[in-house]
Amino acid sequence: MTDGISSGSIPVGEGVEAREIAWKRRAATKPGPAVIWLGGYKSDMEGTKALALDAFAAETGFEAIRFDYSGHGVSGGAFKDGTISRWLEETLAVITHFGPEEAILVGSSMGGWIALRAVQEIARRGLPVRIKGLVLIAPAPDFTCELIEPELTEAERQSLATRGYFEEPSEYGPEPYIYTRALIEDGRQNRVLQGVIATGCPVHILQGMRDTAVPHAHSLKLLEHLPADDVVLTLIRDGDHRLSRPQDIERLRAALAEIVRA
Image (cartoon, rainbow, N blue to C red; front, side, top):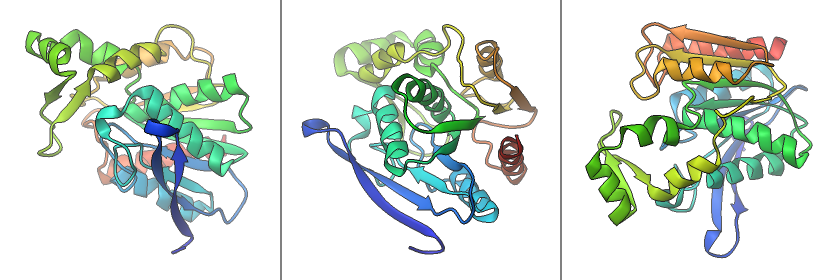
């Protein structure tokens, strides 16, 4: 353990589905909710926002938990095998492994979708953790159905049919994004923008208005499905999808602090 941070991995799945999920945990120094990081598509637990969350926990004394989905970062498993259901299973396994009584879920992009699904599954399964709040950064619920499928070109549809995947250039690195047929088909089974999403906790959404990956209209649509919750939406006029600038990190810290106070 270094500076209160321990690391390790937990097994998830059996047989050919078995994979090791890497995690890092900052131990609490005072009572309070665990702050749990849910990263985005192709991101990992060492990114700017994940480290900012850890720093917030260090300053406030709360427990912080970060992990990499399978096929991401230093976790096992192949990225091409990833689906929302698979990454949700890993999220719930991590939460169950550490067993916090209370937690705040912080989901970035796809992690926002997984956070919403996790809240639903925690309630459905009666898991012994109380979700005290959600902070969603450029959340992308239902992105496979809402943002990818409607924009597929004929060539991409053909690639999905024949190869089982298609590639798309990334703004953030040389490696392209890969979207598989399994991811898209599984996404239809995990949709949340089809009725009321009952989180039972405060929700703070941070959304850039210059986000070209997840348009800010998508966050406005999400608001319509959260009618029963205390929801704050912060629109950042010059913010992009990453929201990793110093001023964006300050907004993230402020959102966390507000939910802690609530």
